[in-house]
Image (cartoon, rainbow, N blue to C red; front, side):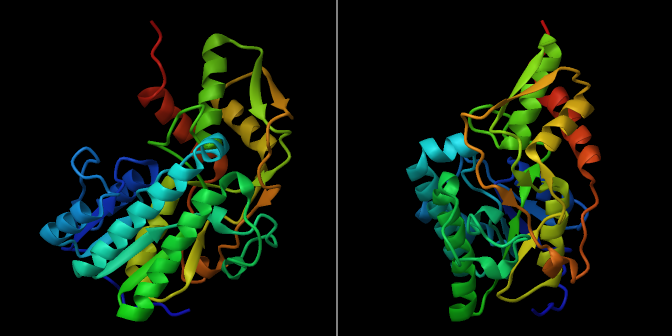
Length: 319
């Protein structure tokens, strides 16, 4: 692992692909402190899966750096019910943006992977070296395969063309601009929606998928954004980086924390007919922390902020 001479973002044009999503919007907020020009484009104007149009846009706008945070994402239900979309759409976006960045002479690119790329039963905590050492978790293997391809694409382009394209793998995320949808959202956003509905309806119970025992690690999107900018500025090489807290809680504890910050007093009702997903998923973020980065949010503080954002910006307003 080798740290790079600092890549100064000041005065540069920086393209954030996926700027309206949770991760992309967090990166844009973080970049506002770097005195750079932030480039964005609405998906209604540019389909990031359209290779020819993406290549033309990159050639015309000539960004110096790219954060590739655009992706089709979702929870267990979405991955299970739409595997072809999760595989094809993510491959299309990655191929278009990464190859287009190479053609356009982009100086540096950071690809956002995911810790779901690790084997289902990878040794815990998961180190970056565990990649491709065993079978994937079946409930999200299509998304994982696409993300593995993106990470390997960055390594291949660096090996063949010498470009400074790097990758990181965030753990489970939460925060502003998440997909607050019960069917398609990840655990944190779906839980916030469920608990808030129970609060407003004064419901006696909140339904929770699975038995509550799986162990998960959760990271605030603003902490991920800070890590992404940190890596963009300070690292060049072929190593990929876990981005996480290195701390885990059970799904039961997580939902209880959401209930606490929302002021919900009812009971949790676990539906054991629903899948748990992987039994445990904890990252080893020591590779990144050895370079000097660390997260700022503890779980309760971060969830309280995310819950407030949801209530103020996404929750249905009382009639």
